[in-house]
Image 1 (cartoon, rainbow, N blue to C red):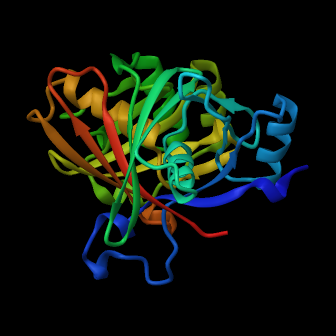
Image 2 (image 1 turned 120 degrees about the vertical axis):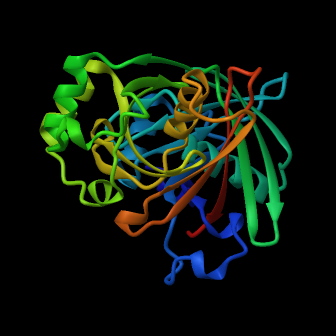
Image 3 (image 1 turned 135 degrees about the vertical axis):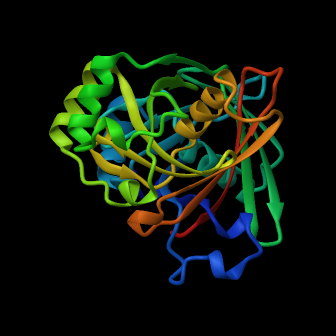
Length: 293
């Protein structure tokens, strides 16, 4: 099944983005694991799906060799289906290329369009910055919000009125819901079948649940039933969509760098840096990554 070709990376790890040793996971765990298969041109769709299912991570990235124009085809498969865009697997794939000497600016073609990624280094490890496709957002319909709250076992009063429910896009759709209290986010215990059915009907990839510590600092959790995963420890696609949401609704002074801490409540602390410009419909998301197997 070509499982020996799979590189195992953890993306959006905190290590490369902080000099504060107290912020690092005690046991080294953190970030969102992703499989990466380089030079995957010879693998058909069925083989890619079988590999992703066997690996079992929320996504595995398959990177083809570059074409004559230098652009690489990049595709993502969850254990259950292909996904149009995955931020953490993009970061993992870019760092995997950098680890074998192909660093700097990288051009990818994904199902959602063109994706530019730049790799870099800090004293603590490698990073990658992806530039999303143009973002967009729309107000969530009342029935969408009501169904989501029911599946999450939340009440309308749990929501923070400063951040209206929206469906935000940066390559795929994510329902954005903000809560008033950090404790509500920490206590997340949702109805998996109900949320999975709702997300399938609406075509959402994750539900991006956030709590605002400040206008530029957020805690997040992302249920991911469409991928057969209860929760994603770090979701770059949702972070990019959320950046577009913040810009379009005027919820953050621009330009801005927004920090999203995710995965803390599930024991895999992760950090995503989101850069938002006033005159660019795209969003940049930066994270660290390292190979663990």
